[in-house]
Length: 145
Image 1 (cartoon, rainbow, N blue to C red):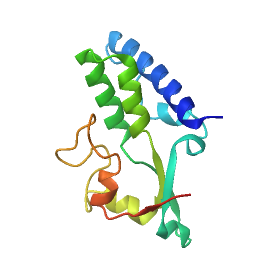
Image 2: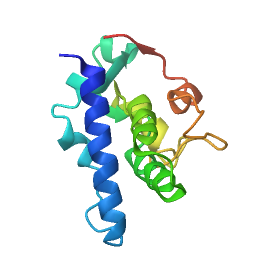
Image 3: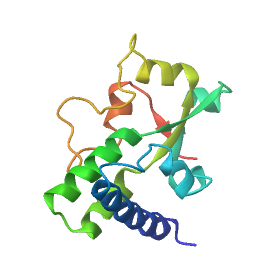
Image 4: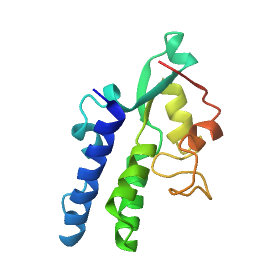
């Protein structure tokens, strides 16, 4: 099985689904859709794990680009009129998960930390941005699985 091809085909389905949801005024959109469309998600889009997890820390599955960002950016590009295939390519690029420690997730997502649970760092752009920028800012080094 070509995992990247499967992710792209699923991303294309999601773009279609989001388009239909937009026509219904946004009904039917939920951030957990990513976890259900490719299940188990880590079999398809896992990009690596942190050293803390390798060393035995309690782990947490983290979307590298938050699902809320993926949804809002896909919707923005749909509304802009970008071809669905191009949007699906961008979604495929950014739809990644990593396995990090619960402590690392708290720093990344929490208000006492970077507060990036549902957003990317200031200035990041979906079309050109580095997928891993949020983790780099949090100084979470990801090692291949």
